[in-house]
Image (cartoon, rainbow, N blue to C red; front, side):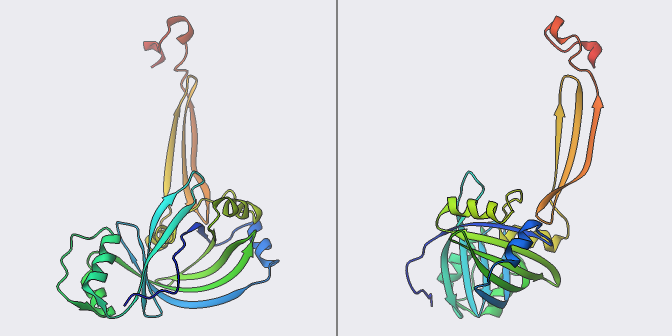
Amino acid sequence: MTTGTGPIVPRWEWRTFGTRFGRAEVVFESLEPEGVQESDELYFLSPGGANVKIRNDLVDVKVLEEVDADGLERWMPILKAEFPLTSATVRQIVDAMGIGDITLHRETFTLDELITDLAATVQLVQVHKRRVRYSVGGCTAEVSEVTVDGRPTRTIAIESEDAAAVVDAVREVGLGSYINTNYQKGLSWVVDGAPERYAIIDVGTNSVKFHVSEWRDGQWSTTLDRAELTRLGEGLAEEGSITPDAF
C-alpha cells in the first residue's frame, strides 16, 4: 500500500560529494546538531535518473521536477509504499526510472522479487548513511558519512522550499564554489571510481589554449593546462580574414 501523512511539498535541494569541504567543515563543527540518524539503504540507479531507494522496508521514489538558474534541483516525492508491491505500483516505479518498456510478469512483488526482475536493467547500490542534521539560514542541512558498496565518501545537502534561502545558505557555509549534484550522480561517481572529466579548447587570434579538469571532492581539479602560440590572427587586420600563412 502507499503510505502518506500529509500534502507533499517539493523542496529545492543542493548537494555535493567529497571527502573534505574546506571552510564548511569549521562552520558545521560550530553548529549544534539537531539530530543524528543511521540507515542502510538500497538504491536503484537507472537511465531515467529518478531517486528510487529502499529504506526501512519501504520503497521511496522521487522524480526531478525542475532545475533553476542557480543549478538547484526540485525533487517531487511521488511514492512511498511497503512490500508487497502491486504490479501497478511497480509500473509507476519503472516508468519513473525510464525503463517502462520492460514487461512485468507478477501481480505482486516482494523486495527479493523486485530485485530479481530489475537487476539486469538497473544498477543496485548498497548504501550505509550516518546523517547529522543542522539548520542553516532557515534551511535544513545535512552532513553525511556514506559508504557506497564498501567505498567511503561524504556528502553535504541543503534544502528548503525557498530556493533563494538555499543559495544564501550554501554561500554562508562556504560552499559557493562547489557544484550542485544529486544522489544518483554522486553514487554513480563513487561506484565507477572515476571523476567526471571535462575539456575546453580556446582558439584565439594569438594562441590556442587547452584545459582539462576533473570534478574531485566537490571541486574542480586541473589535470592539464597548455597554451601554444599560433598567431592565427597575424595579418587579420589588413586582410580581413585568416591568411594561409597563419596556418
